[in-house]
Length: 253
Image (tube, rainbow, N blue to C red; front, side, top):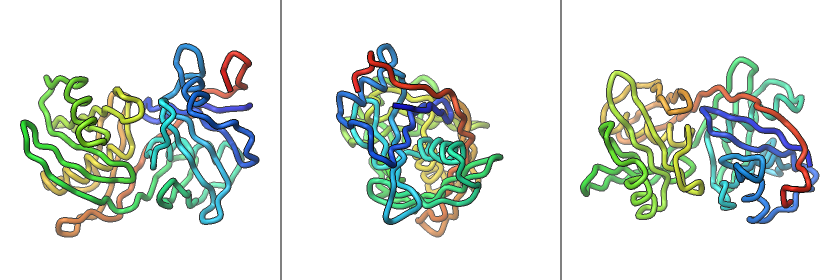
């Protein structure tokens, strides 16, 4: 089975062209393939599939084997994968688990037109927590630099069943993400960037575009703010090809 590996802001994925449906799908096999010691190693596994409702279908699985609704960095890598397969530069519609989004694929840059964020809620406990759905449920928390990332990330993730984005305000906007399905920190998160930018616009009056800095690099989010709503949400990033290969017999697929 041939595979390719891509990354965007250090968020890495294994991509497989599965249009002829040859991958033997199971949770154990996904975990084995994503394992960083015994497999290829990745935050997630992405399938390029046929779609009756869009140009392509993208299915994404977290490293624990669970299927995710969407993934911003995964979509950026998916766009790069499409071009590397020989498809022309243009805008493509992509069917996800619960929605259809579009990717503008050009050799000099990739952008994702996300659907308008939903289910925006505010909780005030020991921390100000904002919940928002940008294709995937996210919690956005404003913190200073000395927060206990792993402890607080795990607790908030379990309480709200969401990815958790810790935003540090300053001359630059820094974000760290505790990701559901990885159950730890990822170097970047595209839908998390969209969530953080949306809450920054609504709560802190941040203007578009927003440049966000993750441990693995930067992502840019543009949007329009209309009262208490965010629309025309666009994620801009720079995915890159890492390597390709074939799965060996030692990987249990």
